[in-house]
Amino acid sequence: MRVNARFDAEAEQQVTYLAEVTGMGVSEVLRTSVQHYYDMVRARRGGLRHLSAFIGQGDSGRSDVAGTYKARLAEGWSAKHGVPIDAPHAVHEPEAAFKRSQPAGGA
Image 1 (tube, rainbow, N blue to C red):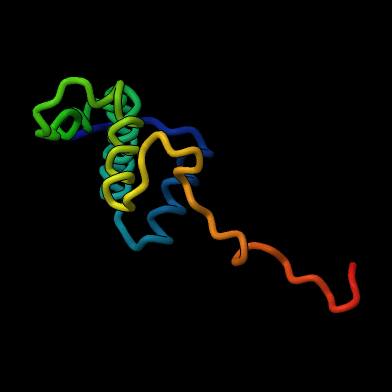
Image 2: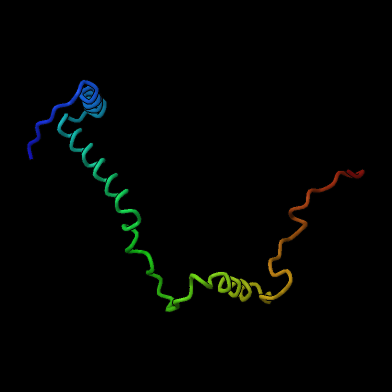
């Protein structure tokens, strides 16, 4: 496609600058600019549609994962660490590793 366009002085300076800095010709600068603008508009208009190929691709066979993930996570941790799910302190954080040592004469 052949295009004939009129630019104001500022746009002409911008195209000239881009051509000089990048070493591209004016036509290539304009093609690249149109491609960039096209990509931006498509991304904004499409939202997250480009991710639709990946969404829901897990194959667990369960339909309740979104609503019960916390319970499933607790079950997994319980099984891994041998702590009952209903234990009062199911999450164990070693206190000694996080306490600051007191100077030898008191605080």
